[in-house]
Length: 317
Ligand code: SF4
Ligand code: ZN
Ligand code: ZN
Image (cartoon, rainbow, N blue to C red; front, top):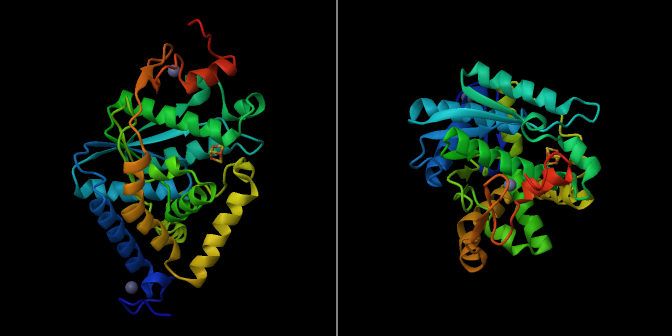
């Protein structure tokens, strides 16, 4: 199979676009597509400092490199962020993940911050898994959200970019329909305005780019990334989430472009009306411990409540 743009051998067939491309032309094609999506969804409008949350995996490291290229053309500053969650499980997952993130930050000569939650907040995700009854990923999500908002405030960031890809987004859309979670669906979009009480936007620049394309880009451009996935992954969301993801991939094989249509139509046509109807501006209170926003009427935010349950914070503080 030859590249559609030159005489080189094609390394990837992009079935939904009916095109096969060589290494060079695929990289160019993906970079161009990335830039077009950023512009179309106004992700960087009015943005001067962007933090990229890098876990060390293929999606976030590729996002970092694509954002870096863009920062050379457009006028914004990039800051690398890695959260060391303290996930070990005999595999040193967080240590390896931070090492890979830092390797990429230093390769690109970026300013960066590694936040070790054990040092910063007194507990690790592995410890929380043992001590707190709720699913570990829900604690981890809370920790990541809090930490990213916190670091954004401290570093004066206007936006934080995360590496959610098209396969993730398609899974979120279908799971949202499956469970009837209208509130979650009404908030699912590539550019989220700041949470009440914060100033930082959250953007998902890879939200319409397939996982396979990101992996191919990372490999051919020799981006160092961690192949291991989080050792807690298989316990997340149980078998149903895995099946939804697998079925989506099967549908994609049968109907090329299926996931893209699902997500693009959701984002462009359905999410807006849902948000108008269901998303409500919530009033906030301030947490009496950390001073960060919390739901109206609550004295202590969920994050500080978690730290209290972990025994690393005194309620009377
Ligand atoms: Fe955290 Fe769960 Fe993701 Fe692991 S799989 S990083 S525990 S959210
Ligand atoms: Zn070519
Ligand atoms: Zn708090």
